Image (cartoon, rainbow, N blue to C red; front, side):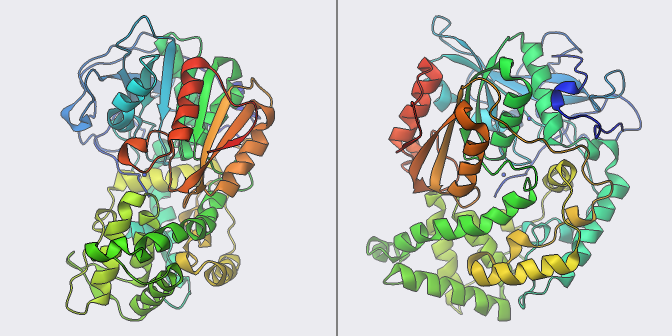
Length: 522
């Protein structure tokens, strides 16, 4: 596969035709159209029989039952080059989906729904959020989403990883109970070797840059001169890269829960920031779990937030020393899996009760702790491949094992809730071939048509990281800071955990173009 190291921007690439946690879970698979590529097994398509010819209009058809499509949602296939530098070479199929506006008189264009991840499905996110977004925007847009390469109904990559290396608690590098990282180093090297051996050109094509190029081909296939977007989490980086490469193709651009886009910190910096994010967010859980209202629910863990924190840290240390059997055969509740369960619970207030119950079960010697679903089994191999593939292909990671060991020791002392995991070694330290192309620095060059929205207490992308995206975009953007915790902001009010002020501000921008004159707080 041809690399793009010599290019200084995505715009230099040759375009031929018109992408979880959490989650990283995928289902089914698209195909590559030429032998010799490594798209992974076609376990079943996430789209119906519709397809798009290269350079032709998309042909919309029924979505497969696995999509659980919203009313009116349609699906199609987009053919794109496996390698955009070789448009006449092998091609792969990407799953795309659309929820057309039901109010033609109100329609003003197309809006891309860009998922997080790496590993999130745009098609599934449209199925989950499309109806609410269509109602909120009054039918102003056809809503369109793409399953990025490697995800959902799109072409897959495989690393051929052993099952024990595909559990979330092992794929994420939790140090040993004593803080040592020897087993993490061995696993990281083993995963990198397997991906190099089995991943092929398809795995190496899993990059943010290619998702941006694929989105541009989708815009062309739709016949739209400009598109709007609502991007979440990792998707904000994808969207910001698209806005930089194709500024004249962007209309109204919403970045929900952004991370630091500094090319020196992309991917490894995002992971490291989760330690501060957990510290920012944990007081919300501690206040909830110590509130008298929890008493009647059997979920009050202590009399004060300070006591909740002490209890959780002490329990994690006890589980480090003496793991507990769980309801999942062969899976123990260790200090690492307990801390991972906490990290997952901090994403949403709705997950607080489940984690409080886990604490109670872990404290009860007669109970059998029930692990969260995300920790109850191994990821599919395709999901593991996309989880490590994008972050390792996008940038060169540090390779010094002693430096990782020192960073873990310091992080464990500073941020005990995350136990050193966010700065620990990953397969990227041993990734064969390094970055596929040079990372891009985002700038303020382009139209001022971006609205950012960010929680003050985000466990994954802390507000301080969002401020760095805001600084990079300069006068192109305005930032709405929301006084709440959790990951993801827009359109959560229906579940009782959102922010009406933030929702109004985003909806007003998408429907009228009106944007705050300066950064605001809700």
